[in-house]
Image 1 (cartoon, rainbow, N blue to C red):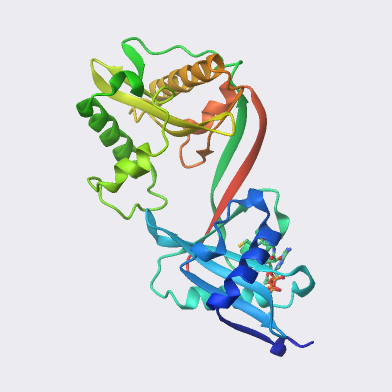
Image 2: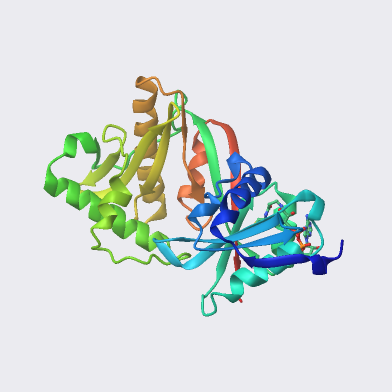
Amino acid sequence: MSTNDIKIAPAKEADLSGAEALFRDRFGDEAAVPPFSEADTFFVAKYDEQIVGAGALFTSFLHREIPRVAIAVREKFQRRGIGRDLHRALTKRTEGTPGFDGACFDDDADAIGFLSRLGYRPSLDCFIPVVDTAAGVSDGALPTGIEIASFASAANPIERKSSLDFLVASYIRTHHWSPVAIGPNDPLWEKIAFRGLRDDFSLVARRDGKIVGASTAHVEEKALQIRWVFAPFPDASQELEILKGLVGAQLARAHESGLETATFECDSTDPVLFQIPRHLKVLSAKTWRRFRYAP
Ligand SMILES: CC(C)(COP(=O)(O)OP(=O)(O)OC[C@H]1O[C@@H](n2cnc3c(N)ncnc32)[C@H](O)[C@@H]1OP(=O)(O)O)[C@@H](O)C(=O)NCCC(=O)NCCS
């Protein structure tokens, strides 16, 4: 077989199930790659009419400018330049894009080797611990004058709107590494921020009635999934104390409700949140590493 026998072309409808099977096979369930059919741009590599490689660009409507690249090649066909050719095809069709993201877990030497050879550079690490709710937060002491309440006890529409505004402004500000494509007043934010949320586990911190922090959560697979944690203080030590207070209160509520574990994501672009796991009992953890390629 010569590499000339391998043809790269845009995926057709009939290729989708084969390409999706290849993605599942090569990425596994854990790797957080969306189904191939959700891609915006996709190519397949075929040898003798069989799919031996597939590549896709995923564009989240929230972060439209920087698509995420995912490429998979059948083991038997690796190291013949198919991955590189798929990457070329994918990135050629979107000239003018400021960059592309690649992502994998930090122990995935193959993906890291491949992305690095293509010119991707690490952009951030996202640490994902699973923590023991019974252990709570060590040495947490809320700064004076801060009160924590659940969304359930702040269910009136005005308070809900101010919680939403706070969450959206904080989310946009912290995503400077991946610009947000919709404006702060877009009605879609309500869906994004509140969908599936558990009001009893989602908390706001107030000082003199004003929201100074919030942490949202939902429950999945009998574990508390902490979603957005923000307390944008100019003073980082106060920010840390409020974040610890919010997360500590969420863990206590989860423990009382019989949820033994909680998980959340904290990335290296947020140095204060990144300190939180040090104050928790971490049972296991993985690190999701993002890479950026600027053509
Ligand atoms: C990663 C993967 C797509 C590579 O496909 P491939 O067809 O073997 O890659 P190529 O042959 O085109 O290699 C392109 C470059 O990456 C390098 N490379 C490929 N795999 C590598 C590895 N495991 N370690 C180090 N470098 C590697 C090649 O040496 C080549 O560099 P060169 O041209 O300068 O010699 C394939 O191994 C795979 O499907 N892995 C599982 C899914 C995955 O991890 N995808 C990557 C995340 S998007």
